[in-house]
Length: 267
Image 1: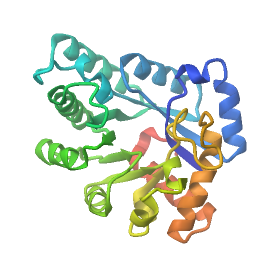
Image 2: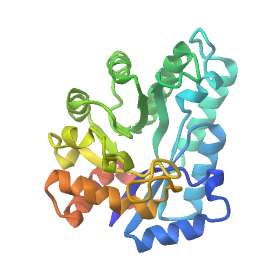
Image 3: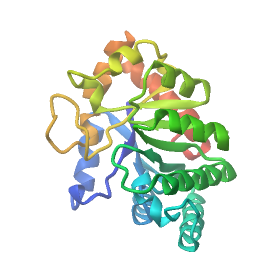
Image 4: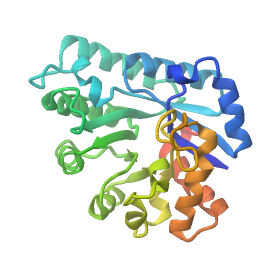
């Protein structure tokens, strides 16, 4: 049985279909799922979904695209930002919340000023450390910068997931050495992906599987709306890279998720 560690069932792409999507997931062997917040409304929606379905857990946080809701362009946390952080802490008190995320740095789109992104990240890393929760990190064109921020702030004791991992072998080794699991999704199945070469040097004990649904569908569904039922296509490719049978990869990555979530998980 598989765990989808990153998806967004609260998105409008799944409106009116959540139950059907979950049923298809279970039929495909995906029995545990973590719905990820990316701003305050989606974080609240993620917790509500998890409260209503035992297959689901939630993460709460503010994505770097929305960093200006927490900090200003100069990198100072605003009064509104303090209120959002306080609300995230309230949401995270729910035992169905297993991580703070999706937080991080996105220097590809740069939809928020970089000082605001850094400040929002630091504030939420501090929140995760205070609440003793792992983090789910979004990192795009900022691999070295995220390492710099984590080393300056201190890696949360519970580590976390490097979502949609796209770094090199050095970044993978750094993450594994500092308690992070590499989140591997549909892009590993793409023809020109460099991930297979990187993952060939990573033990499966440092990996988890994800869809990022509704985005990043694996081959053979590329171009379609992604959903958790497609996770086995990603798993098959990762298992091939690791030299494992798919059921063994499911067992190992499931144990990795259990270790990450602790008593807030499904065990």
